[in-house]
Image (cartoon, rainbow, N blue to C red; front, side):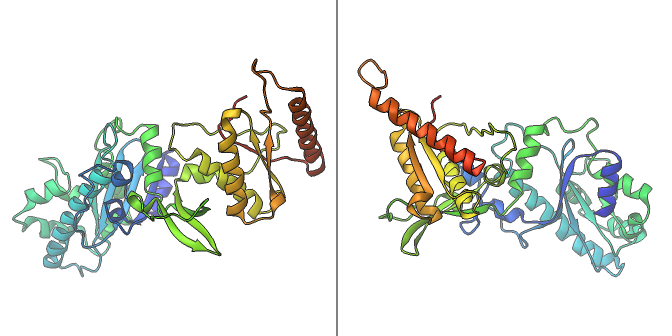
Length: 373
């Protein structure tokens, strides 16, 4: 892995290398925190996992240009051709099954699936022993299909033996044979697909707990356990939510030094914009970034959303009554849609209070759901 890293650095290759990547977690297993296609397509009938003897792939490489490489490691063969034959068959069959799992439950919703390459690493086997073992295999063509090796190509080319690891030239040859078969790269592996795959393999997802406004009458778990009620905690009903890396980045991202640091979350209904707002307020209070979070109501239609966010932040963070302030910047309007004089005074008073808070604390933290400017 270190040699691959050095090679990638020298040639400016972009990739993520994982060891013991748990591909089994991406099937429709009810015990896993994230179930790939099942979580993205609740009606999918393709998300049933295969029965894998193990729940991981030894080496998994997500390459920015060449697709995905899945490699199995065969250790402790004692350079015995018969032992190599037996373990080679099992490794090839397992890689084939793992490939099907990943295709059906990780790549199923992509418009164009990236290429999945296979390789086998034999750290205790010499090249001569491997060649002897392969010559005596009666099902060599079947193994070629399992390892996605094109007809006419030698299976041994995608195998890395003990002496190959110490020779950079041989290592490069194995790398090209295993991953760089498609010259010019994999057309399906664009920047968006690469980012998605890296995020999907970055499991387990971060889980957070969110206060529920009332104890649910019926507790149900969503597909993939992305959201589920965890019952009463400290006398309060709580819900457990799994966050995607992009969502968690919004929570962890520190504010800029600019005076007008603004973050806008946008997306259709059901993309957890309000939940992220609530959790952001919780983070600010729990980590003592500030003592007070202000929740703005910017329109009359947003009154319910503003109240819910302020209530949820206060209860989730478990802070005092003054930790969250609900600010009505919409005011009351007459039939012509003009602010009444009394509302103008109240809005002006809130503006002055926010300015004073910013001067005293050097920063004011404001949340606004369904914001209108």
